[in-house]
Image (cartoon, rainbow, N blue to C red; front, side, top):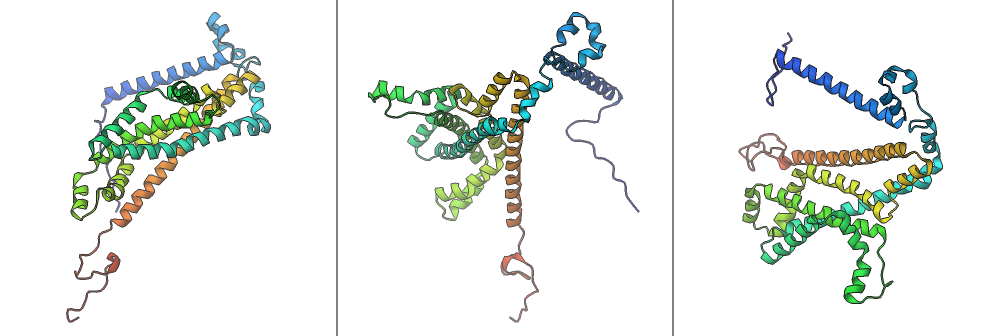
Length: 333
């Protein structure tokens, strides 16, 4: 005999009544029509036929208006360059590699920077807290592009302030981009780590101190792992922002992905197809980064469940090493 389970009502909102459901259907239809209108406007605009429709709205039903215009951005000539393998091997893939290189190095350095200064802001020593707080607030309050420009201008600053001759050292665009991304995003991550550590219940650190653990052990073994696990969504979101901010290397002539696609759009006069493909690549990379972080988070959660299995009390009946229940011990033994 099967028992039919009734669908439990949502606790977030009440089930809409007939009038509310009718309003929602009207709003959904309106939103759908508005979305289709915007999509049609974008299509006709890039197809270079919107001017004809604007001059004569009756031509909106003319099939020739919707046909692909050879002078528009949807023509095959605008997309055919991306079918050439040499374009990908000569421009797109090297630009993607430079983007991933700058983002990968910056992610590692930003996480280290955030951990060091986030923990430093929780130090028992006042002077450490003040220094770490000043560094974090300073770099978090400066625009990222200014940090990149300032890093490039370090040879000039060294010459003006210290009298170092020009040419003694140079800063390449890759170093400038990595430095700017590390300082800015590391400062943001420092606040994320600090908030995560403060969110861990105080009883855990107090219990660790009662066992004789030092603050370094408490921080590295108890507080930081839980803080990283609980703040993983915020950390991943900031890392995605870091990867997208690597496109600012375009301003300092760093040959990253956006710069290569801008050169492609200029060379082949296909700005819109180049922008669409570039955006699709960024979306795929960011989604892959998010999925990787989700997989790591699930793996850590499974580890926590595996290590938190209930075990029998020491010396109790049926207790055995590893928490596996065995046969009851003989009282005579």
